[in-house]
Image 1: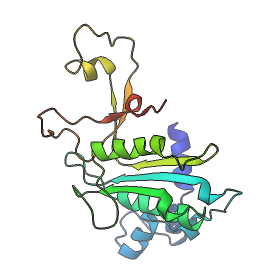
Image 2: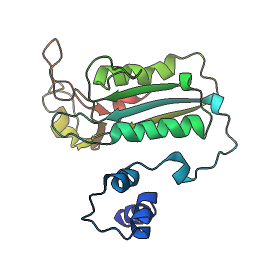
Image 3: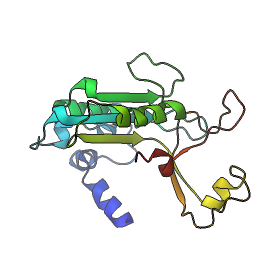
Length: 200
């Protein structure tokens, strides 16, 4: 798995740009480094396939501002995905829901904050949307921190003792912006595990 990741990294446009310019790791040229971190849709050379973009629905989530483990570039990555969806695949902007942050509450860029409640509400909106027809495509893109929990430890103080969690596999989770904070009623705000997002 690591080898595949290394191969993919070597194929990124920014890496080939660095080789062409014979840059070293010590280079602090903001123009070149910025280009390396944020490739353009054109530089990725993505070709439009036989896909009807009007039949695509997307949720894009970018979380930079985790107070415990801050990241940089997740919102930019989600914005690049949006640009690709719109410009390359022809997805109408009104079919794309954006949850970008480091900010809490409403943002000024037309997105909403990627809190746990907002992420779950947005995911469930796909289930309740009567405009999504059989055969439509849905894309959920998440850029941010993730976590993996041992099920027994994760549920230890969160479920009644009579509930057995021994057979549950490790849990993978998305980390919302407000993780580990306290909600208005006092309980800790949890990460979003996959089993929380089943829509059947």
